[in-house]
Figure (cartoon, rainbow, N blue to C red):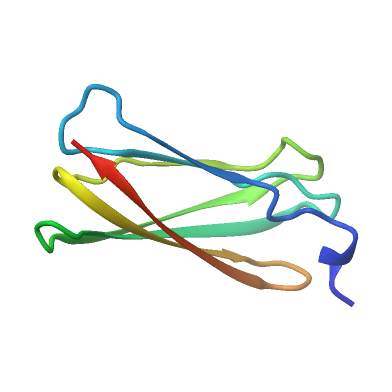
Length: 110
């Protein structure tokens, strides 16, 4: 039985911003918490600048605690350059029942 039936291990969020830094976007990943807690999480960001063809990848790891709001926060600040940026996130949670989840989107970077 999956612990995800009574848990919210993917209750995190992705926040995208650009703070007066031309050609760079900031991606903040909040991993959320878990009643199961004590498992690892690994986030990989793959990005592509759709205007220039530039690409990059970065991976960070953290741990998820036992309560909501006690998860990892990971920060990515890739040098994407200006343009439309496609992002592909892959999150791998380890522990009792390993899970992998992906999400994609685009952001305009000036």
